[in-house]
Length: 205
Image (cartoon, rainbow, N blue to C red; front, side, top):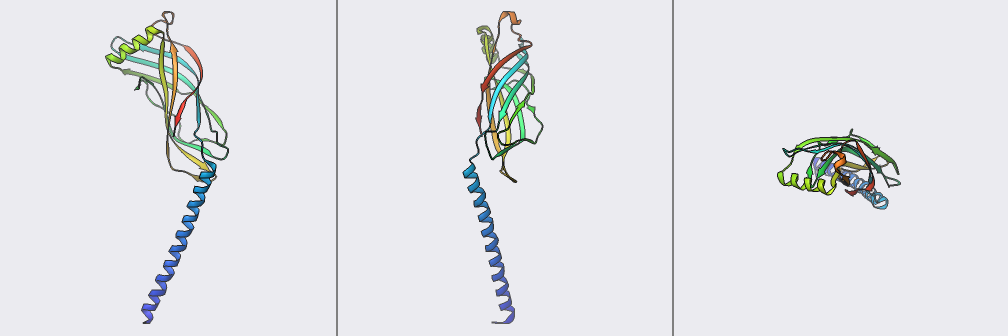
């Protein structure tokens, strides 16, 4: 074998060994992260709708729904060794699957440590047109004396273990809020009333 060919053979063999070694290290690191992940088993955060101050819920004759409220939601990270990093959080209100307020976006980069509890108190406002059918249904709800509005949270989060951080996960939260109405509330207005709920929300990750 010529010297040049032998030198190329040795060099390729060395490169192959380096690649195999690097690949083995990568596999071990990934396996270690996966093993830690399986052992820790992250648990989804817990959301509780504590109260809502309803400033307006007004259905006009032109089928425009005006909504204004401030909500208080407490969030708990139940994990002992896993932090939760919220990259984006949008909160809005909906009525019978129609969004009735603009999405209020919380400041990005919210971090919750192990077993930490935090409280969010955003304002939700909207003035949206609704269909004649939905307006009729809401009028019936007003007449019945109770209106169900769903407070929803849509977020992107990451799990954090030490210095390692996972990829993005989509968080969907639904909190039912039952508001009562009556003639003395200035039907169909519900103004300046604070409702206490302390109601758990459904959470999907």
